[in-house]
Figure 1 (tube, rainbow, N blue to C red):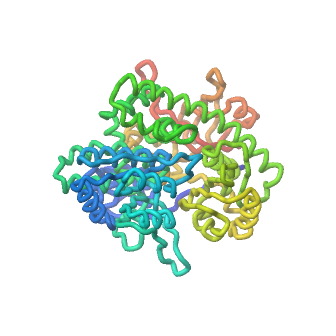
Figure 2 (cartoon, rainbow, N blue to C red; figure 1 turned 45 degrees about the vertical axis):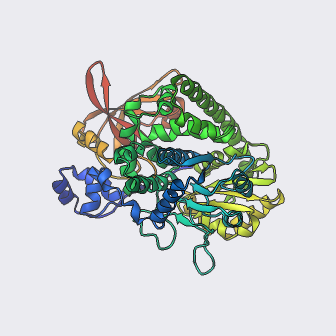
Figure 3 (cartoon, rainbow, N blue to C red; figure 1 turned 120 degrees about the vertical axis):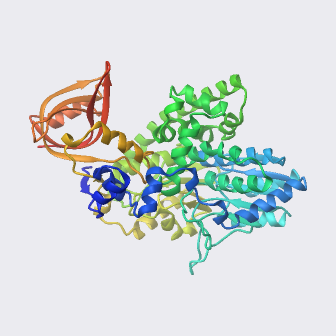
Length: 570
């Protein structure tokens, strides 16, 4: 699908911002394009540190939850943490378990099995807790939609504390539909004063731990040393890297370089990465998927076991197991994407919302495959799989389609559902509901053809001649890049092509010798199918390009090398 090239046209006094903060006007424009406005916001964006984190006391019920937990610890009551099987749930469980153990609690944990239990807490988990003499259930990264389950916990005589970050179902009057609990810590609930609502479950847990440690007079250095796991969860759960999230990830990546976690260090080693120079990309596409793989194909307790591990040899074995599981997951995903694409091409090409049924696909891969479909067709996509008690599915969305709101409109079809504007999960009682879901979502979808055209946003139409090493280093201030803080993209028209050479044993890199309109020679790279590039280029000797500037080092020499992201041949 041909993408539409779009240019940001947001206004500001770029020269004034550049003078005040000692930056290039180009950098000032990029910052404005990320919707960072005002003196304080710009300062936090460029130079924010841990001192700029929001107070945990702004989270509704956080102080109440901390007080309750400390009371239960003092009374020697049994506490059970109930997490979730994805990276956010694993990191949340790890953080709370470490903190409560440090506080001397009688604490253990339970993470639902993706296949057997499904998402979130269920009656069987509550039943088992009651049988084990658990007094208090503490959820993390789940629980906000578990109305019936929490009522069951109340009837069983247990105290429930919910920590979560997911969207909250509402009634027809727009009021929150909340489960019963002694305390609910979720920034998205009505009446919560926390300024930044888009934190993940592990950050909610991290903030609660801050209050616990303050009250228990534990040195705050110990709390700060846990930051890396809140950062890993933020990236792994694809939260928006804006506001506090971006500062938290930036600081968390520094923390990883000096991590005390044997398991995390071993996992980084198995993936042949440099722990001192990890980026958000490495977390999102290498380390994170390994932590997620255990919850997809075996049990998430394996990932948690790795993070808790303090023995070098055991950690080495566990890290290798997670790496191999992730490799297996990749192969299974490729097969599932192929089957889903064939189904769309044969039957659903004209649908506004893609609903694909893959009964034999491992249900843990549904979300990944849905994401690939979304990328391929730029349409909201659901992948439904067969489960023990009906069918389960995961969806991934586009900006123009609020997926969780869409599911709320057809909630009668589900036995369970939840999610965000951009992603959701669901369970239904029988296969027949798949076709009903497809019809219902497509009948209600208020999407136009224009919504399905992918857009490539250009930050600045910047001549390659303008780029300097100083500017490239300055752009690094804007990292970490990711969802909501995308890597800047620049563009230049009318580049003359002098020479093209395909490189690499897989012919997946292209070196271009270009000449700018002012006559400046430029050596550029494009990482793509080299043969397809040559075929597309044909006889053309001119191009427009979207690029990001980098510094190329070879044999002690340095040169500026634009990396082309997209191109159009004249």
